[in-house]
Amino acid sequence: MKVLVIGSGGREHAICASFRKSEKITGLYCADGNAGIAEIAECVPIKPDNIAELAKFAEENSIDLTFVGGETPLALGIVDEFEKRGLKIVGVSGQAARLEASKSFAKDFMVRHFIPTAHYKTAESPSEAIEILESGEFGDAENPVVVKADGLAAGKGVVVAQNRREAVAAINELKNLVGETAAGKIVLEECLFGKEVSLLLFADGKNFALMPPTRDHKRIGEGDTGANTGGMGTITDSAILGAKETAKVVEEIIVPTLEGAEKDGFPIRGILFLGLMMTKTGAKLIEYNVRFGDPETQAILIRLKTDLIDICEAIISGSLENTKIEWREGSSACVVLASKGYPQKAQTGDVISGLSEAEKLEGIEIFHAGTSRGENGEIVTSGGRVLGVSATAGNLQEALNKAYQAVEKISWNGMQYRRDIGK
Ligand code: AMP
Ligand code: GLY
Image (cartoon, rainbow, N blue to C red; front, side):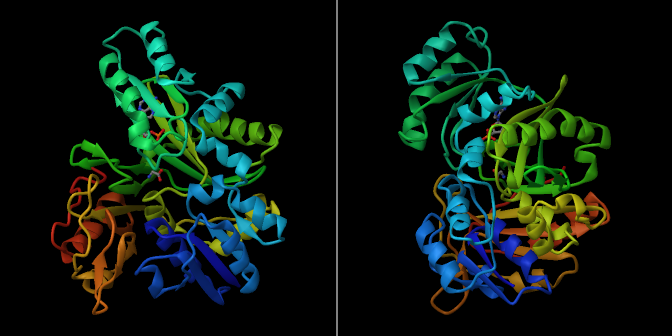
């Protein structure tokens, strides 16, 4: 089978690595890839948002299956276009992608289908948002409140404001931060407290299969301090979400979501990612993503034992119910290594050393994000998040120990990472 993966980050490297393990693979392509992906797949120089060119490539190269990594092509309707041309593709439709691409659409959907979430209000302009705050709907001036740009903002569209003054500043700043389009509407939200869990699932429109529960580490600094990032590390471990809690999330959030989406005319066929907050009064849904997480995927897929191609075919044919999906027992961890200056302004072009030594360690897989080849063929940094060092083991502590042992072998000028992932 010839498979095309769309995207160029650590997530897509992990997805490619999973496909590479399949005996059914006869060709693996990635648009547009990175230096690590180039070791296991043929990189194709087409950007993920160039849907017409991607479809043409798939047709001309007889691609049997396309897998979409990120949200942008999904929101642009890549799945609808491929399906129209009779091309097999895994990912949600443009209609379903609105669950991620518009926060107000997602919140209205949650309320319509009685899914537990934070109280919210959508404003059409910054002045309306400020009026809502001043009306006291989100408590007094000292109350925390969350300010969100409605549209896709690559993780930059959310500010957890500690009080009304910070919220007003965030509202006024939002357009500069994420652009006019994404900040066209503003969602104000009650601030929730608790531990966050990322729960991902495969869905075929009706049936679903859960992946191991995951925890991301979003802040740049140890002890969850400093600026928000795309994610500095992840773990998977059964203790993140116990069996009882999982059953409740299935009943109160997952089933109503899948049934609601089907009823509303956009069945969810692909990957669904729930951002959950475990509050004192139960799990509440913060957000939907309609794709794999980055770096959640780098910790999840190294535990997958079932052939990813079989899962993809079950998603497309609606037969997930009859597909047994097996995971390696135990836990996993992924530690992200980032460039100097990330997340503000990442320094690039630094030569990375120690990669092959680290890769030799047992139970380790290294996923590239911002890497490229330098003039002499050496691997150099080319982005903010550069590598994800992933490990699996019988328990979380062992997985973390292994990952950090591998991290110690790798270095470049200004490399930064958190030493407290999973602590
Ligand atoms: P999102 O892009 O919606 O995932 O938001 C990014 C991050 O902001 C989340 O992972 C949470 O840490 C935080 N966040 C979003 N909404 C809320 C909320 N209602 N209460 C508290 N924290 C939130
Ligand atoms: N790691 C969070 C995300 O992929 O959205």
